[in-house]
Length: 362
Image (cartoon, rainbow, N blue to C red; front, side, top):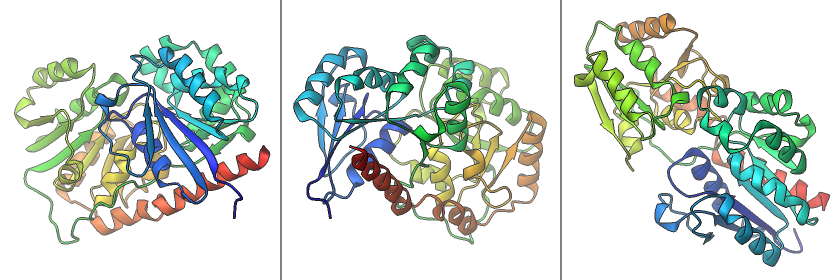
């Protein structure tokens, strides 16, 4: 038993819809309160919040950009003197790292949210925030880097000069108690596909549309998400004459309903951190067909049990045709694949052990 609680501050740019926002706020609110005194600091605006965080102190700095929050964050940490500070998303991690030498008695943890070297190839905007040499320098300053997948850890070590001893691999937890579909539930007619995620280049919506344009059977494809590539994606859908087969939803609180109502989740991403929505789809019993890419796919998908991984457009189309002709997935098996690996209790124990080990170093 600890003589006092470990004071830990989590920092995020916002609580808007996003994987990093959901996971880090979940971790903060589910730590053992008899061991940890946790606070969540948001550099952005309270009005942008979509995730409800219960039983957790949340502080909003209400700044328009992360960099403009530097002074307010510094003053907050100087006043609170936390044992540990945890941040996520590379531009915030970089800023916190450069702040860390000013706090000798605080451990700084950066939770990386992407396989950066691959993300930068498909989303040049990420490269423009901080150049690579600054990220390399910043990650030398933090005490620990949480990587969500093996691919991410390898990227940090091989491309950003991070010592392996400074990394820790912690997958994302299952954050919702979704109900698994019935084993007897039959494939719908027409077959229903779904993709959920930000409409940006690295998510690969265009190559999913390419594959769907080559099918000779009717289908319904639901796209959920918003982002800068919406117009380009829908121009391409119209070009391929698929608009009548598309259902578009910008944002919904009923993700479980749409996943359960679908037969197959389609993943086109070139790069992911560790795609939470694939775990959620599997928990519900909806299998995945994904283009091969970095970001934990081989940790989430057991081929033939809860999905397939395609290495080319032709292979992606062949899987779509085969699944239509003979749907091979049992929802209960699909669900069990991820439940055994990513349960909340298992992942939260890994976070707890990490934070306690860091406090021993103090």
